[in-house]
Image (cartoon, rainbow, N blue to C red):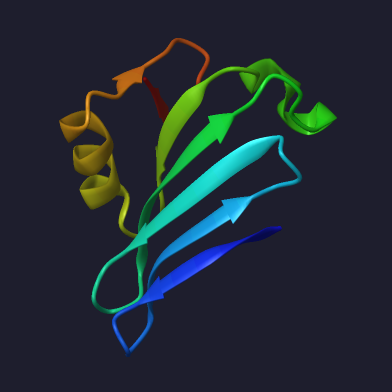
Length: 90
């Protein structure tokens, strides 16, 4: 994976990756370097393990910050989808 890294000098705050042109991933961290949530955009030809997500943009909350991550996903308009696990879809 390639991409850019943004740091506040103490830890990486946001990681941006582009996985071989098949998806983009943005990871949001708090000031203590805990991952709060991730946003993923799956393009039309994702890896086989993600084929069900082709064309989707999702937000997922990370443990142990799940409640903060879920609030973030919802505040950006993410909606739970039946069978979508802990992901919020846009």
